[in-house]
Length: 254
Image (cartoon, rainbow, N blue to C red; front, side, top):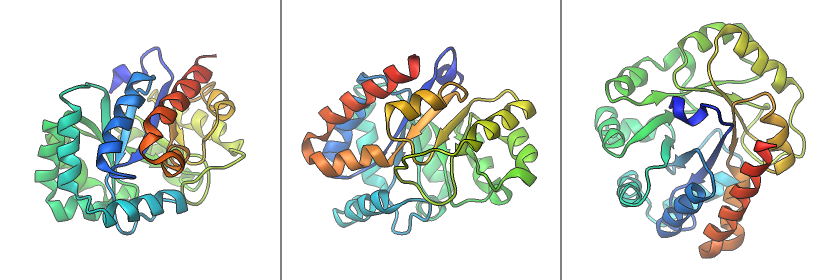
């Protein structure tokens, strides 16, 4: 995980696996990797993605309608690993892991070289059972902090693994025209507690936002903007997402 952020501002894109299809998702991963993505979040579709806005909710719903299962996602990642060693993380919900079997899920993830797991519906206080099995399999369970986390911030940061996912605003994911100015202060508060990489997500969509946030954060997470490109271009999305990724990554270097 340290290599992702070492001397580098990390671009961390999110995709919903199986949207518009698993075959296209696989090609998107290659396009992301070839154009500068540092860590790719692979969203395993779930019927009630409570942290997501309308764009990703619809993508998850469509993937499930297409019969995309957790096992099918694992099989896709196995194909990816024959061509790419790009850093990958799974982002999903607690019930997905529980229903598959936590230990079995983590073993599969470890075998596929997954470096991190993000479970946005698991509160910090309830992370214990997931964190223990993650650590057994060499996977970092990523901690989230939000504008509402101030009273618990120090404890969260001291126990965080890998990097801290800093939620830029209240509410669910989705493209936003403006990112709260309070985010920089929140990142500064985290850094005063501990020198750990901080990636900012929720709402970031354009190069100007990415450039601005990368001035003070270690990474930028982009999800809804990429999923919207999937909706717009369908099977041709990999080419457009590759171009978008290159533009975002270049902006973050300036």
